[in-house]
Length: 234
Ligand code: URA
Image 1 (cartoon, rainbow, N blue to C red):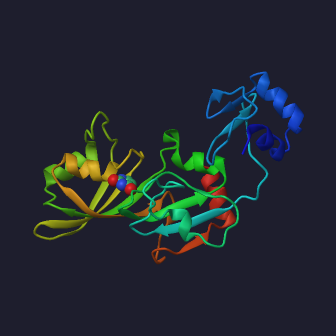
Image 2 (image 1 turned 180 degrees about the vertical axis):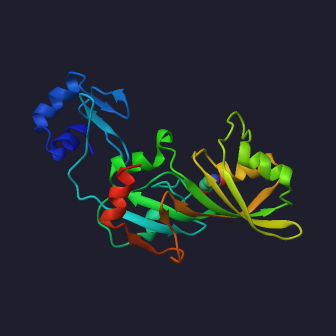
Image 3 (image 1 turned 30 degrees about the vertical axis):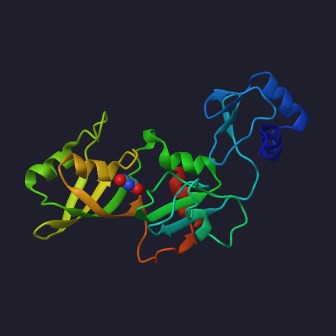
């Protein structure tokens, strides 16, 4: 949507006044001043006028989806693969996935058109806990576990302390639950690789207090108003 239309929809200013606000450098998108009235605002963009966050007045929708393996979390895929949005069939608003979940990872994915809620969940300063259940090949010795728990270098970034619980250790594979507080690209897979193990299956089971529970893969539900309010306190 063009920035002037977005501002007008938010009810903050008329379309003409919006043009003026943009031209005079009072509007920022994702922290950067923009001056072209034709600038396109995309899903998840954060728009500010004179430092105040504004949102378009479209009805807000919040979905908790159990993403199966084999779906990307971008809105379009240049390889033509299925997207998480393809699974949400009865919502007319344009919702977008909050953060990413790899093509080969299943589990809890929030989708919304509320930029503020997306920001709460993903911004590193909020350090929202994400829990994953991983099937890992390799033996999780105490040394390896200690490294994962204390922080490992995943290529120029050292992860913060993580909670790691071995649910089941077989001879050469283990089922592990791991809680992390950052959201680096392929973080869990890289953490295990850094200690010499390979993740063969990965599922996100919670984000903060939101849990996947027994939801079937490919299914989804709306968040309750209480859950949405809770996210806004993160
Ligand atoms: N860590 C990963 O390695 N992949 C994901 O999809 C999420 C976290």
